[in-house]
Length: 354
Image (cartoon, rainbow, N blue to C red; front, side, top):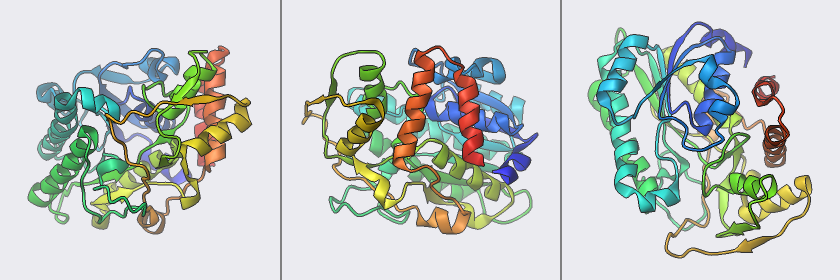
């Protein structure tokens, strides 16, 4: 990642959603490479949060505001004059979307439209990566890994809202952002999900649930669907893909403007049950209860094909699933034992880059 470090040094970068799990890791990566980062986000909605635990509130300037507030967002763009934008702000939880569907569509779809409008107004932005999810594809039931050209869909409000984001991104690209010409602006969507790593305390996510059960002694772990298969990957892998993608866009590579999957090798698309088995091998054996919830159906098998990113971006999955869990549990162990998680975060970033 040495070339990335040299590239981002001194670049003005705006990150929406920088107080979230992925946003915090991305912000640490950018700051460690010398980027001039402005964050735009709501305050963290979990306590603890990676944002505060690792001192990001003291390391960069963050504008605490709602992605749905176009005036505030536009002002942030105008004042910071970013060259590169990463859009991660969202309502990110599938199960929460069943209880708050209107908010989910508003934050995800219209929040993305607000960012696209700011890109249209601020001509100094050369590259933008707008993050959606691996769940934008229409479920087929076949278990086959999705490629970028597969049909968009999504049955639950979260997945559907993110599929709508992809349509909006494509519409703006075709309508307002020609891929050639002087001063061109290029942007892409990035599709990844089921990322794991230290610092995530979200509800209804497997690793945070394991952490609450193991480290916080919050009771026996409850699992909805132990046979569900997902494209698990350490957060540093897809984020590196986002950085590589933004660099290519900034350099004017028009062929990079489009949709990109970032996902692990097929062997790391494992079941919840297999994740728990690996966790047992690292932390010691512990049981769990199976408590299905038929009222909120979930896709049994979800896989992505990232061959485009591998062949065109030179991206690779560097962290296999067992190592990813070891790194995550090391991070949480450090937190709960009072160690310096900011230093550990930077160490893991440096080791990954090497």
